[in-house]
Structures are given as structure tokens and as C-alpha cells.
Image (cartoon, rainbow, N blue to C red; front, side):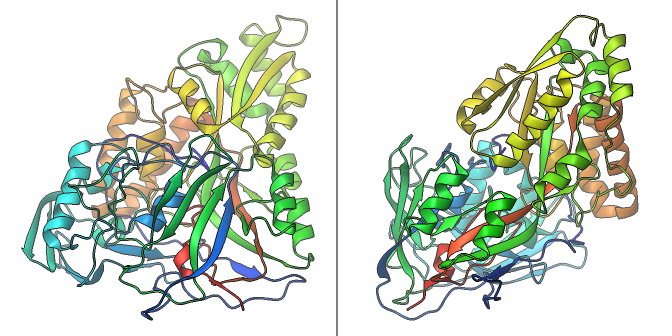
Length: 538
């Protein structure tokens, strides 16, 4: 979804294997390539009292920011804002590959991993002024579980939550799970004042360093955050007191605004502009490998793509090598559904273009040169140059096969609404995990759904569903068996069902104004800037 993300799911969360060798934070470079030292994003900037400065940090996303304000069900673009308004018990550090303290200062687990006890940070207040204690944290998590929206499935291992005392929270699990990592999720793990939270965003009820100053849905300056002066971490004068999200669909426009000093952060540049940014005065760049891949989802339920031969032909028509070369480092050719660094990644599943075979499959389905013309609709994210490149290359190739691609760039909300109605033949979007685990690709995107949310291939396969349901506990008890099951599922979904093509895994290429210090990319929180960790030089 995504830079969009998702909005539903139910299921079972299991143990993730933390083999994330590819998830280290990226290095930040100043103009001319000079490395800039960056502190870890896992700890607050300091406990010093005093007001933050009046400078406003401007983030330029290419899509609308907020689709859902409720921290229990939020599952989309708003992660970039909510990660600065709300906090979890822990936060994942992509450099150490471990969970670090946030609202919990320490935690222990039983030998079998079925009991977890968290000690909570004392003196923390919600934005409402009420204290954040064990009873409040328990109530927030239970509300998230009860609403069964967003990524609430991450709490499925939980059997019981107890507030032992004001600062002690105890979890009893149904099966072993890494609850410290579950608690670090960028979705459904927020601790909030359950009595005050407002799904419309009129009341912020978190503990984070920022609150909502204004929200103007659909406008260019969509959202502004302001400092929460009573934040438990305190404030230093050089920190940013305000943050504005200025929606800028076109990358070239965002780049110009950055050079003019009108924005501070462009989350993604195309390779040409990224190279230019590296030698531009007043600009610094950041690059990091991600857990985010591009999914090209084929409608398995209706239209011409209901025929598996057509879907297989479309897979074979994509010029994977040409696309990877054209991305010039901003994307790495994928191998299967699961990115490298996560349990379930499979080597040797790199896709290949095969036009003669694609033409034969189309002919078998009644389409192709000298046969009936095939017209297919495709939707993708407006302003995303990488997706546009894929669409341009694919459209050109398909013309040779007498297939016309009717491609439409759209804002995420509109694209997603259309997708939930089954309104296109091909749906292009990004996907990334809720925390460093492969399960969400299978549960959210490929498990059968009566009302599609992110299963936008509309795949329905009871055998695949049953295998998906077994993944969490299998991962907890037998990692080798889990690896084999993940491989089998990927072969079924990609090769047999041909429900999806996976061209590449993103490599983030970002640009910032040179006076920003403290930025650290974290692939566990895609596109999130932790504004509290930043300071303005001078």
C-alpha cells in the first residue's frame, strides 16, 4: 500500500526470526559525498528542559498523509505522522536489530517465551494530561485487540494482560512469540488514552513528542504537528517545534522546493535527481536498503486476467532486468515475495522476461498478434517515478503482443477505494512488514477475503489459506519447516496461481536540507522521520 499501507487483517502472529542482515540504517551524506555522523534513532534527544525552537520542519510526501486517525486501526500512509504522536512499549533499532526501550524501560520473558513482563517508564503523561500507567496501557492494547482492525493480528499470541501494579505490565501468551519485537510495530502497537482517543483526529491521546496543530484533508499543506511541551523526554532549543506535511505529487516539484529551502525532506528521488542531489550545495542525501517491495497484483476474480494463462503471460512480459537497470540503484531485482533479511526469503526465484512464451500463453487464451486485441486497466501511485517507469516499460512491451494497457495514476485513497471494488485488472502497490517478519505479505495480501482490503488480486484458495494460518506457530517451533513452507507458498502464489509479479525491492534514496542533523533511516518504519531526533544546525 503504499508508500501506502493497508487496513485490515485477522490471523495469528508468530515468532519472527531476526536474521535481518539487510536492514541496517542508511548512511547520510552531505553535498559532495561527505559522511555525516548520525545518532541512533532509538533514544530521545535528551532530558533537557526548555522550549523547542520555532523552526518548522517540512516533509514533502507525494501522497495524501492520513486515511485513518485511530491508533488501533491505522494501517496506511499516516504511519509517518502517528509515529511521532504515539509511542509503543519498544522501538526497533535497525542497527542493533533489537527492540529498544520506549514506554517500557526494561522487560523479561520466561524461558519458554510465553510470559513477558514490562516495566513502564514513570512520569509519562498522555496528551490529555492523564498518566500513562500499566492499567492505561492494558486498556489501550485490549481496545486495539477488540477492534480487530489494522494490524491487530500482531497481538494474537496474547492470552491475558495484567496490570500487576502501576508500572508493571504482564502478558501471558498462548504460544511463544517475541513480544518485545511485536511491541515495536509501526501499526497497532501504540499506547494511548483509550478513554479519549478520537478516530477523527480531533483529539490526540498519545504520549509522543508531537500533537496535531491542524489537519486539512485534501489540501497541499495537509497536516501540521506541534510540540507536546510536557513530553517525557524533555526538549532542547535546537529541536523542531513544528512539522508540516506538504503533499507534493511530482518529484521534480519536490526537488525544486528542497533547493529553494521550502521543504526539508523529500522521501524519494529518482536516480537522476538523487545523483544531482549528492553534489548540490545545501542538500544532503541518505540511502538505505528496505523491506519494501513492489507488487503487481493481477485480478484473479474477473475480466481477462481471470484466466491464469493471461496472468502468466503478463508476468513474463515484464522486463525485470531492464527495469532494475533503469532504476540505477533505487531498486534491486526481487527473488520471491519476501525481501532478503527476513525468514522466508528464497534465493533462485528471480523472475525473467520471456516474450515468446508470453505470446504463446496469450494465444492459448485467445489474444495476441493477429488475434483479438486485449485491453487491460492498471492503477498505480501518482507521482511515483519508479512505478511510472514500470508502467511505461510494460505498456511498450505489451503493445508488441497486441495488448493495450490503460494505465491510470491515482492518489492512494482513490486507487485503494477502486481496488476494494475490484475495479481494475492490475493493481500496483508497495508492501512492507508491520515488524521485521514475512507473515504480513501472506496474511494481508494473499489470504482469502470476502471484502477485499489488501488482497487486491482477489485470490481465493483454501489450501493456501490453511498454510498461511500455520505460519506463526510453525515459525515459533520449527524455523526450518517454516522456511520450507514459506518457499512452497511463494511457488504456489507466484508460479501456480500467477496472482502477482514482484519486480524489485526498493532502496531508499532520500534528500534533506543540509542544516538537518540526526536523521537515521529505519526500514522497520518505512518513510518515517522521527522528528524529535532531529536538530537544526546553528
